[in-house]
Length: 88
Image 1 (tube, helix red, strand yellow):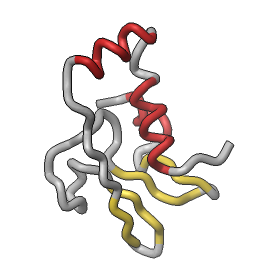
Image 2 (cartoon, one colour):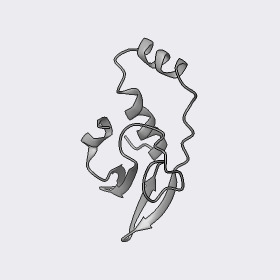
Image 3 (tube, one colour):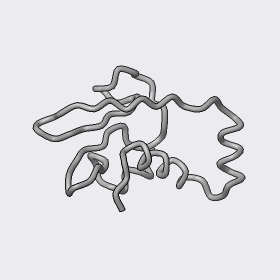
Image 4 (cartoon, helix red, strand yellow):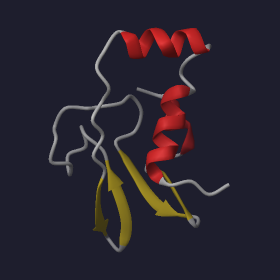
């Protein structure tokens, strides 16, 4: 299934919760994150950076997980591999 980078990151964030109640408690406890992906080329590869990444204009991390997705294998995926979607 093909997904755009914002959907990948949103679903990875939701996957950290074990229930709908957990998601609802999380969103009730804080203001929504402002996520402004920024795109650039790095060594000929398309890269999408999120807040907290050294190449992003916002230094403060907005979401857990990777701060960068790269275009490889005909899709966007985390620079450190798919398992990094679930790490902090």
